[in-house]
Image 1 (cartoon, rainbow, N blue to C red):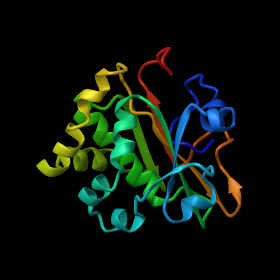
Image 2: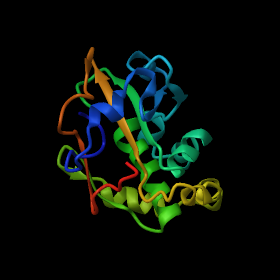
Image 3: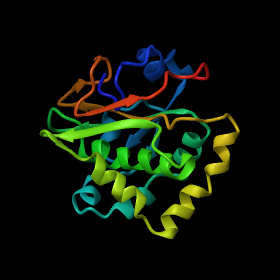
Length: 194
């Protein structure tokens, strides 16, 4: 499936993404405005803008994550953000913006990245750039995410489980086994909580 993690983890992705109808174990968000075209009918809403990523206004990208999404990530819940692309690839809001949000959560809550990130587009790696962006945010952004840090202790959260699922030209990319263009490999196997 075209989510932001590799299938090196032995998860049953269809169960995580689709679950058993309304009893899915994942929390779904539709990225406005086009994400509502491909998200489940009861998905929550968020607005991560690709134009902010293009303009490199990273503080605005980080501040655009809804409080509920940040809290759920801190509690260790599996979150899938749905978006729709007019091209046969993941939107910039997802491969750049959502990845930055996930990296920033890991920096602020765990003091380090919990996954090895290899974020590439057209052969160029953006990993180090996004790491630098995440480490150089101002106090306002840091304080917002730090506010939720204590929630990571409620369920002993050790990873941020925030991924994207996208659709392009009517073709849903949540069923395939290899993601593109992002590959994230976790250093440790998933815990039994997953």
